[in-house]
Length: 541
Image (cartoon, one colour):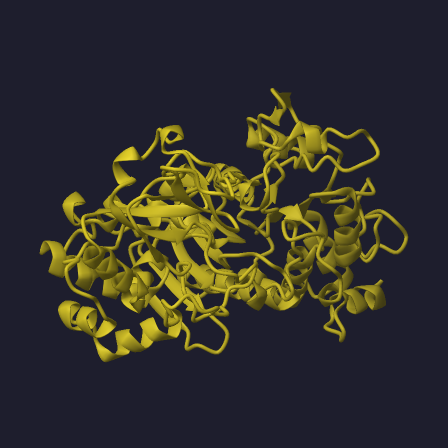
């Protein structure tokens, strides 16, 4: 028994959990190194809140991973507890058995991950098997539970997670991905059903599934991770730590209410933000980066915000999560100071970051389908008398003026068009980048499909050229980035951008001088935002 326990819990190279392939971009295995980074953050918070006490030397603390995949969190917690409890419980066999039966718990997300997790934690896929390092379990599952669950379909969607019946109502031979932790109206009752009794967890930690297909495509898929966070909070652990996509910072599909609740929650005490998901999950394409957070039930206060990106110096500061007048989380610490300077010059405000409506650039930006034409619209190849020129996906076409019923007041104005999708980074997060696709001027008599946003109305080419020059400035595009959660560029991302005098052309030098941007802030802007070539030449991002 001692030899088995020692083999299971000692460090060895290579670690099998660094070698397994991810299930998908939505169900990603956590690298052991990163799991330990999160556990270090947790242990430091515990020590700060408990007079320097060692979390790993407390045999009463219970841990739950409600979205167990490889079992890495439970394995590393077990390893730490095995060392931390050595003085109090000298017998290794008794110590390991206590930890595995009384302190670490998991809920598998699929049949195969539950088996993998048990193998990682118990050294056997059968918790009560002869090779298991745990003794005393009556079931194969031990404390790592999994049973097949079913979705609750209403009008083709699951009422709990929003999954598509067309995609996942597919018979008994395939996984349903109906995760037990979020498919319930009463999480406390569910946990009691799984583990028995009045189970109170001190720590909940994990890496939840990110999204499930809802019948849409790409970023249209419905997010899931926020449901795991909300259910975990409902269990009221002392600490909650999860790694999730960073898109929630600015809300978006299914995330607006979650964002509001998170930003208003003073128990969210730290956020470690990774601008590139590949820095955490090598080879994973996840646009917008990821973050892990620590929620501390009994010790509210300001949040420590730390930004990580490749070889950049790490940026850390403690600040409120939500600034007055702002409905999103300002991702960059340096970006927050720059935004405050811009707002102070434009509105004289020092306490609120909200620009007056009359000074907000987003008031000039159209919503989706500015002229009522979808992305798939294709105009005529040949122009007839009186037709309008349409900028559309893949080029241009022509359409009769009489067929356009939306945005008619903009048709005969000067305008600027810019693509709704950011330039071609695919699923990579690279810096510096352009933030928006290259804008261009639309003359009177031109319109666009949904592929483009329309910035208008302007009475002259001079004004349109002033706007074009402004959008090419790095500072302008940084302000867009502060409100931009994904590759999609909507009207809302221009919220922090102030209007200017459009009779002049703008440069970054003009803007830096106007807003008193410091040399260190300029260096940050130029590290994040790439120069833009308005000639239309191809620019790699």
